Image 1 (cartoon, one colour):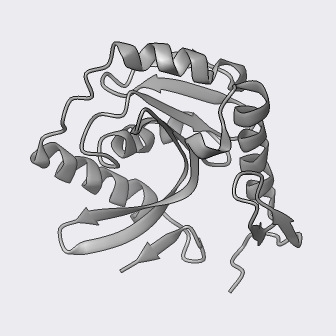
Image 2 (cartoon, helix red, strand yellow; image 1 turned 60 degrees about the horizontal axis):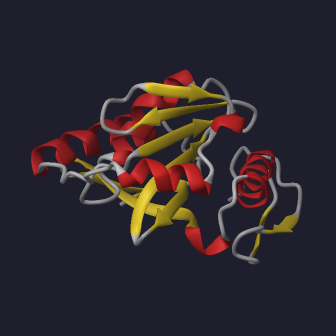
Amino acid sequence: MAGHHLILGERTDFITGRTIVDTHDERYRQKIARLLINHKGYQKKDIKPREDLLVQAGENRAVIKIDFLIKLSSKVCMIIKFGPGSIVTRRRPVLAVSRTLAPYQIPIAVVTNGEDAEILEGASGRVISRGLETIPSREKLQAIIQAELFNRIPAKRVEMESRILYCYEVDGSCPCDETVCIL
């Protein structure tokens, strides 16, 4: 089932080289991938696209996709979550991802609609900059992580953040959304 997204054919994923479905949303994801590689100094090996994340709210479980994980020095240091429309409404879920994806607090969380972006400090949730051009470069991210402690997230907090993610990403999702898999 193709869902409600207009299928424009197929395209080659810029990072992995795999053939993927071409949609308007995917075109924005590819734009972000090119920005990271061509203008922000990341290497393809630094970026993991379309990472699965298991979220749970009580007995309800689902797998959602995280658009980009940026890994430096063997740690996830930045996540990028794409979503069309208003990015303000996506702040809380991206912070929840930054607290559930790894056993530690991911320092930088980015939410973007492909035209604009908000860069958030993972621990505080504070917006530290706005605009695609302000997404930290590889060099800047390396400097940021030098001061990071990568504190562990307590199990109870992970559970609560996972519930938040389930509410935002699963309960509110369109039934034909192919980036959510209810288990």
